[in-house]
Image (cartoon, rainbow, N blue to C red; front, side, top):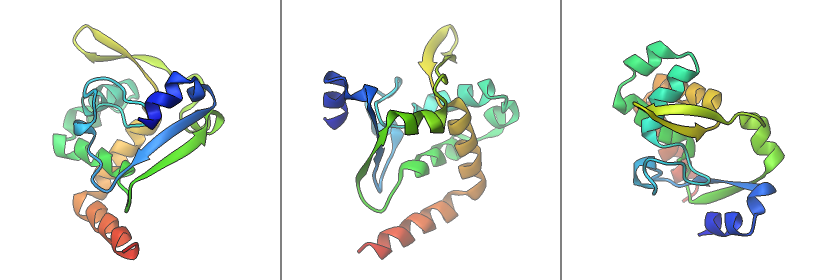
Length: 144
């Protein structure tokens, strides 16, 4: 709801949103196959992003379970929305970072943050689910 109104009233020219939740799961966020404002890119886009970023081995060898760990960058001990100025978002992903990404055979979408999302997917897979979940649960316990 907040994202829709921000875009409707052109606030997205000034601010950006980043959503966090203890049970964050990109596969439950509509639209499933398109960008959702303030959310991670669709999980099906991760392999094409990795390939475009030059991480071909990872794109071909990471399992679906490895890619699912990408959600941990948006898991937090409580629901939160980080409101950032556009210049902060541009510093993280690059002001001119929008590229054409072939997400399926003959299907091209506009995407951004290719380097950041690729790097995060590789790092999170390297850490592993057990360590990521233990860290999340420790954070949740601190906030109870």
